[in-house]
Length: 119
Image (cartoon, rainbow, N blue to C red):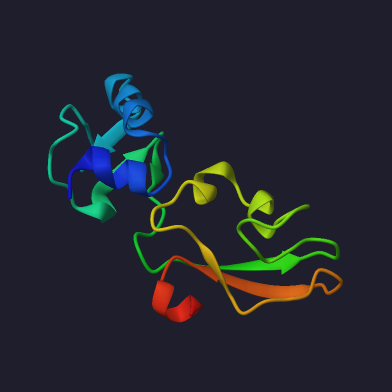
């Protein structure tokens, strides 16, 4: 997959925003400044602002769900996804909860972008 598409799917921004990151020299591949957005990449060798990329598809996160927050993508009121850093909310495929906790419950909740695990 191309550098541009990989970074966009991981939530680093829209394709246009990712292109701006590349143009600004904030993306490196194998220690060298990335110059081509269409270049094929080795995930483990790419850095954004010196930081390793987030894991590709198959990410699993642990989240403490507080009281009053809903485990849904489109319910009224506060949602668990608002507790995540913006980049995780932009990932494709999106993160989903593995199981649910009621709005009036708190506790550990697992989130993943693996649809099979979340089903």
